[in-house]
Length: 204
Image (tube, rainbow, N blue to C red; front, side):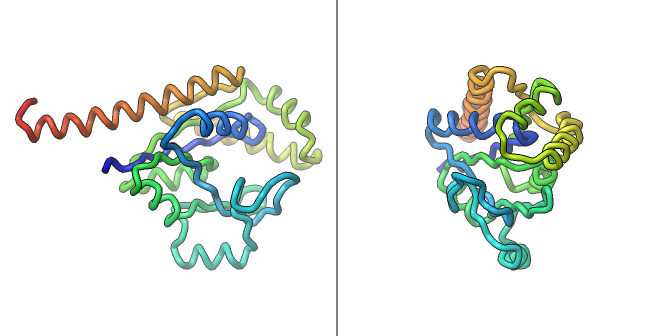
């Protein structure tokens, strides 16, 4: 069986990542979303096990000690982590997995040599547009918005470490670009596997 692949998606808060991911998950088969663990409190409308696995800090630290995370990071004072057993099981079943993680987490995942992975950065058209979006969604107070904008500026400096960059100026275009990346990477992986088989057969 062909193993699945990891698609690491990073984006500043408020860039439209959730909207785009919801579209991608509903339109592409053989694709799963890795649900991260976090110590932050659920927002209104969020459900445990859907957006995140919400756990307390003591539980999270115990998981770190057991080696249960591919990566974990402190973001805005809360801990976030990617489950090693959960992701590995999906990959072994041939399912492609999308990881929604920040720049810190992506840097750690890059060091996991055993993983087949592609890095994608979703960027806003500009920090002024991002500020307008953050204020428009009405989820954060002024201090949080200022923190998110400062962090976004730092995260944008990491774009050169990613394989692809998508600017979310128009949602439909961003969705099409992300779909194109996934299909192209799948074709590349299948081509490599087929090429290896042809070499074994003495055809190439």
